[in-house]
Length: 399
Image (tube, rainbow, N blue to C red; front, side, top):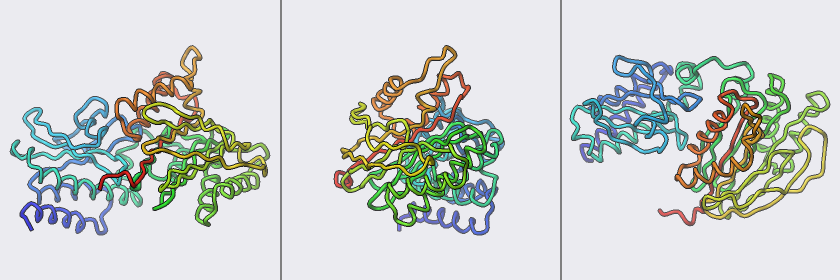
């Protein structure tokens, strides 16, 4: 074993040894201990739930101010998911993306004493390994303590917001040739928007929904729909049964006229076969080669919760590198001060420009929700949620 490999292993072992019975507050000390083994100083920055700033954990004498995602070197490492070198202000350092799988959580600032070490490929690999493990720890430790979430929350969440966020899966996940990412805005006072997914070796199951109303009750409706969807999914039921269980649960638990609009979809990850149904929701889109090539107008039925209805399951076949775009009406119906909608045409143009810029799905979703907010001068009138998924035929992947 080489000396660099031994240092990497020592750093990872140090991380693991210090996580037993560790509270979330101890994450910075764990990162610093791993850094000492590698001969560097590591500072953890977490992105806030608005995905606008990276915040040091905790603030220290050398890292007290948040860094903007859109205008800093650290933010560029986060946006592009790649390690960047910097010698600004006489402080040689690496900015390393902090990931849990493919979900972006922030960055690591890795400071070195000698600028020559920035060119050491072994150091970049070692820091990437440490970053991957720290990313897993951020998610794990956040499940039983508030210290890390407090860093990411820039203001208190409402009870409705906490209800929905406690039920959502990670914003981004991937398996082999499939990546799904979601952004839900507002992130502090959620009404009725929610999403869900499940990924396996063979299948991706997706759902995006919008419950009637904009208050805690709509959050309860959305939570019920999420629970029903998961119950049906865990029982091995397909799209039709999932929709039927959501419909039954909402109609049984809430007053007449309560409903959710939703798109439920399944993607066969081997062939790209897409099956979907649409319960009163905006049409999903397929983007191919940077262009919207199809509006998915099939599989219609009334919103879920209004009683049993007949339905058909529509089908399409995705091609490698196709994007599936799903959104709630809070995206296209966002209005500026003159009453002009963000609209379908602006959405399509935005997606075309993002594809031309080469942005991956998580960055595209982040930028889209920020564009919708900017269209409304920051005054959100309705929940705005987007789900982007990209499929690549595993047979086309280079080993």
